[in-house]
Length: 382
Image (tube, rainbow, N blue to C red; front, side, top):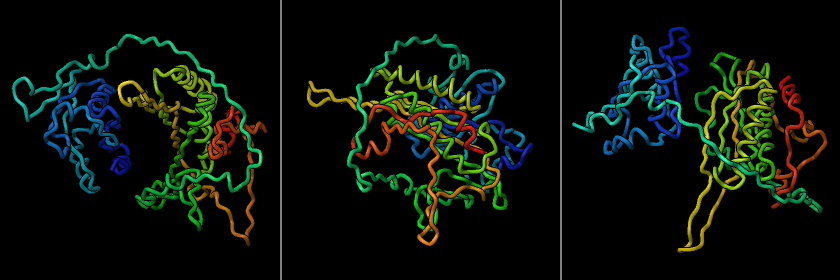
């Protein structure tokens, strides 16, 4: 539906769009207004909801993600409705923007004091709160080098097929490259590629980067490797220059846990202030989850705790000039021998700490792979 509106160019009825994250619409709607310097007047019960028994707070603040709130030009609202109906896209007109910077949420199901669950100036939500000071201490882990003595090939096997075979791979009919590759449909594709239209050779490329196990040894290296993996995966698609790649960074950490705050600071600094500027890339969007641990008790005294290591999941997106030129990582059959190339971005260091090989042999190691030369990644697209 959004693509259909965007295709109208200057006649696009959409003025602004904001995704709904973990905070629900109590974040998304006010932020949409704040971005345009206006206020808003909303009716709570116009929000599409299959459970009318929910309280105003439950509707306004629930974590109902994967939706969007959209500002539509009032004069073009009828055109927007026609597009939604044509595309069979659910929508609801929940309110209007106001010149006065005030947020008002009405509820037609309630009367008297509860008629307006939210009634406050926008500056209360978007004022400048006092800064926070945090004291963080790094933790040093005493680790040993991995030992692969006597390891055979059949002992060094890992498989993530279950992660990439659970979803529909052909939605829209514009999928040019999905995760399954070649006549044997092996899930080894580096990049997902879609076409802009049914008659277009231009399109978009999407790839992920993630090296969370490395954070147990070296948190900044795990962040740099996540960026590097996203770039090298995108390199399989014809992208003109690295500056066209836009990143989304999803940070996860057990804030307050020993060593984790310091690891987060060091990794954010390395990725956002050092590596990405050097590569000429931007991270315009992202999100974070700061409570990645679980604590419980067995009986009255024994406390158990599971802490996830710092993680950076990077999503990379870029325009693709010609979807037909996407590289295909597939081995040929016996009659057509394959060439396997090693492009050594590690400059011969062969660091295997927290690698897949170390994991399948139940080891951690002491030195992980890292981004050796950022300039090499910039050249990988050419």
